Length: 111
Length: 117
Image (cartoon, rainbow over all chains, first blue to last red):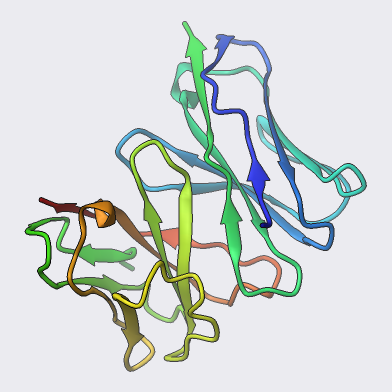
């Protein structure tokens, strides 16, 4: 069973601090990785995509990928209360026409 | 243009009844995806269409579930003989390209909340 694992949280982070969200995956040949944000009662929206080892930055968000360790993370700098949401990690399986989502990490930014 | 739309937004049905959920993707998007999200659970990938074709139906939970897409646009997800465990939010997404290709951003609809009594 190919899986994507995330800590369910909640992860509580003070406003202005860095929030670090982690995700591990089991399929070594996966090539495409995504982070989605989902507010309560709303649909997911794409935050970041990453395909190569290393860091990818977009505004306050940085995605980090380490394929050797099968690990992808999302850093949120200068956390804001509006960042409070569930963050879903998604992985496109290598060789399969499927995308697997983790169960998400609930992030709570403390004002 | 408009985003992905889904109908109905809410559906309450009795166990054993059939239901049909509809998805209108963003105009011009060739790929369309169906997901299910149960309370407190992550997204469960069900099926995707490239044009009108679904290359892999193995993600559908059971043979009570079927999906079709016509004209490369609207898609319907049909659940026959609904069971209580089918209760979930069913989300549809569309993208310009298809899953195997990089840079494929999926845009999600608002979902249909299905409750089976």
